[in-house]
Image (cartoon, rainbow, N blue to C red; front, top):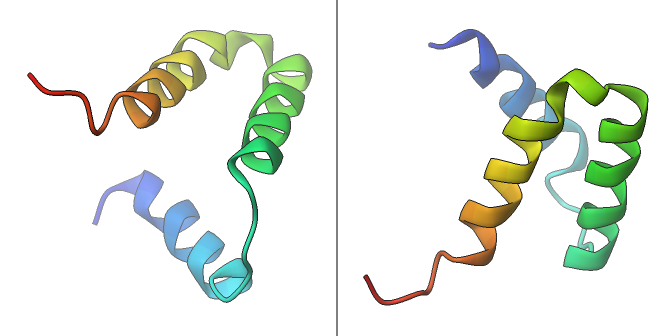
Length: 57
């Protein structure tokens, strides 16, 4: 298990039954980056990756 898996597992355990919009997720990501500017690049990469999942390669 990677260190980051613990956070992902906690997210699923605590909020896995909730339904949220992508707009809500985007707002939370922006809030996180505002509070933690050093994480702007990885958050932007994650957001871009999620946005392009269905793109034909």
